[in-house]
Image (cartoon, one colour):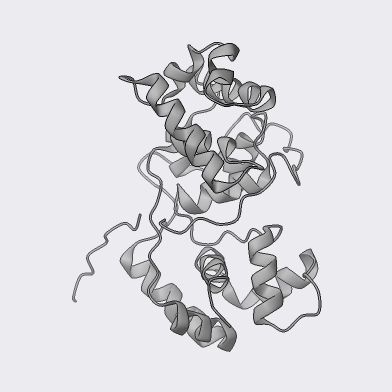
Length: 249
């Protein structure tokens, strides 16, 4: 039998930004006891073989998505491998323009040199230093909370490969400034999970309205009903929804 080369994809297209802690859900009792998979095992993520399976499934299951895939072209998602930095950049980008976020990220990177962005390097900064590079008081508190939780090993990002999607979301929303939307983006763009459907994402909702001829933005129920045929590859379909926003007509 021919063996497929399993090269991991890494996300060049970024979704519309969400709003901090919007749609936060309460964690289950005992959330501190992570139900991680046995050592050495991990959930399926985006590999060449999985992506090809996903595209075949989406083309077959949904004629609208088949047309979107045809127009948008290959799936070129590039994962953010540095998990802590991905969360930092996500917090920085909340509720500001892409240009402003890029400027603050660059200033933060420059200020920390020669050290990279890490939990330790951020935790050593004072609120005044973070304000100096352009952080608001609120985002300063968010970043320090994230950095301190990771530095104290309360939040173990390296273990999330073996955690379920629900466990990852529950762990992340304990951090100030991280809500369900941010956790879902982390699942897709950092962990490469295949079946995440961010139904509250404005870009996904706009795309669904445009592609499926709705009169208004879909609510949760309508969004999930339309996305049902996409399972178990809702992450890939969501990425194509974002791409469809670039279409000229």
